[in-house]
Amino acid sequence: MDVILNIVPRNPIQAMADGNMLQIIIFALFLGIAISLVGKKAAAVKSFFDGFAEIMYKINGLVMQVAPYGVFALIVPVVAANGPAVLLPLAKVIAVMYLATVVHALIVYTLVIDRVLDMARTTLNITGDATAAVFIDATEKKYADIDLEPEPAA
Image (cartoon, rainbow, N blue to C red; front, top):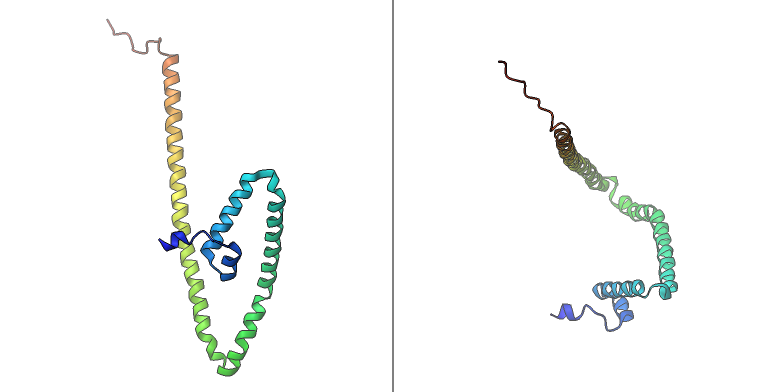
């Protein structure tokens, strides 16, 4: 019960300072819903958050560009102290991850393609059956008054 009661923050700024993610998420949801409901009057606030989001995307992109150099800088002292053999377990993990990715892709994509093709075949069969039924019905109505039975021989 305490979790439910503590979902709504008493002070959103304090929740952010404390890193209380559940309260931050609830506050962000309420703020976003309110901005949407207010409409044009909240356009400036929406524009601010859109611009701030773009800034954060750019910062994240910059950090991701320099991340490999940081990882390299962290690995160099470990390799210098323990020798290059310390990288063997990492190479094994990388190889297993590549193998798992390939196996996963082959299994999942094969099943997905099979399901999609099965749905396409079913759709075509249903469409074909419906078209044939409509054509037969229209033909029967068109030629309903014509007697196609041969006259019995006397």
